[in-house]
Image (cartoon, rainbow, N blue to C red):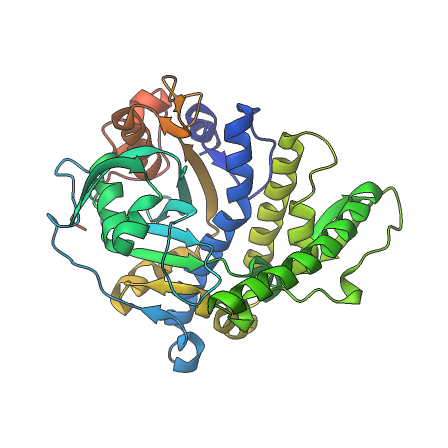
Length: 390
């Protein structure tokens, strides 16, 4: 599998390794998404765990918001030539930053989570929110940024937009409301990171600044009638850190980890992206290391931030991945190394969507995709042949 990853350019984020030095604007976008992406994956895995543990207590996922969207393939924009494999499940993931409890507004994060029981992988395909796509739905027929689809027609139109523009057959989604990233880090017990003395100083500065930002935001939200007490981090004196050495390993809580990821004054923009990816890697490692007995409380804490149309049978069908020593891989769409025609037109990212769709297919379905050899040089796969109906 290591050979395949190298040839594809797919990034394995289950153990951190330095990313490529992309153009500055793309690097900034990717950095802002890093923590939200891993939070989304954590939430989906916990939905799987929570539903699988219903025999313990239905209270565990009581605050998970469940909805329905159409199952009509035409209405969801299914692509006729899309690969179908019963052991590989694609789920649309949308991340909102809405201070109210409503799951509405533009989706700052647009992802596809692939639960691949054939190859023992969790795969993340991030579609940058400024990607220019065609949005076609009830009352809408226009070219716009992909993140507008959710605001126009909720999860159903957003799923349809992904299917139509990238040749997919997605019918399920999970929406995450990132009202408090710190609470997601705290729910898994914090993260261990190597931090320099200079970074400790910047963490403390960011904690101080965050305190004032929170108070200002509370006042604004109260005035606008969207105040939700769960939506704001509570910075306390014990959050502030003291440097012990020039470099040391610290166990960071949610507020500290978020402040670490916001450091701007040390190194380049790429250094900030690297710090955020270190948090991502540490968070995944923490989740994988947790004991089963800690799952119920962790799941219960995170469920208020999630909405899904997944039914219990669908969830349990994906659950076998949790019994494997799975790896986590990710790609971004667009990627300047592949979407060589990428243009930034009036703050829209314009590129060949059909070419990106082929790369997505190869990433998601590996040897089951007709584009596998094109993006992998014919590298052999660890898995069997794809097939079956979804």
